[in-house]
Image (cartoon, rainbow, N blue to C red; front, side, top):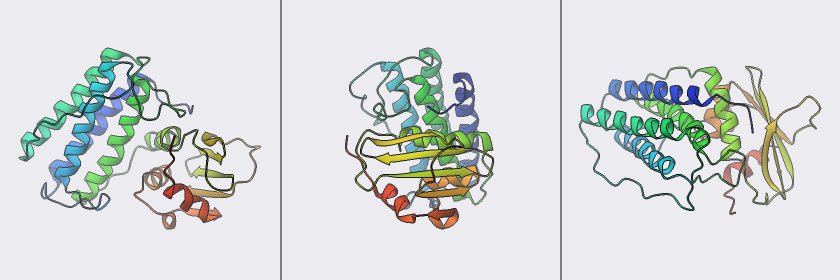
Length: 253
């Protein structure tokens, strides 16, 4: 597992990024404003999605070890701006409260439990940091005022995505390959794809040449793996088709 932030720092980042999210929503011209990076979503849809997610993961962490997650909160979400922002703030505090009470080692259900990232409160906290980070970008884009991401958080976001979304024991259905990701801030990662699955790791000096590599800032790489940027936004070397196969892959475990 890639080195990351301590638990207390993750909780602080959830609070900081959520404050930035609320500020972006408040600055937007309307809750009906389209979100360019989330086709067919309005800003209201984005807030509803993120707030409902915070509440759901709060319930998951509070439930502890489980074979399945609890149902999502189906309660009505207010459509007036001030009330909606208060609802989101409450949603976020429910998550933070559950994480504080649980502590980092508390086991819980997680959809990535077969991968590299741990199925515990620490893993949930890390995932929610980057969920809020990317959706803050979405909200800022809708408001027409995108702000740079903190580089250290974006770097961890790339690693976290590989540890969860690109980590699986499901067999890679194509020729075995390796992908290298290079951030201009000085960090790099390797993703191995073969019959044993997809497995991320830090990139060492003696690593074999990759089938394909992508270079960009940490923010660019994070937005790429989250589907907000495309291959044309990065410097790509090697076989682009490996990236195309990875983007289209929906592994079944």
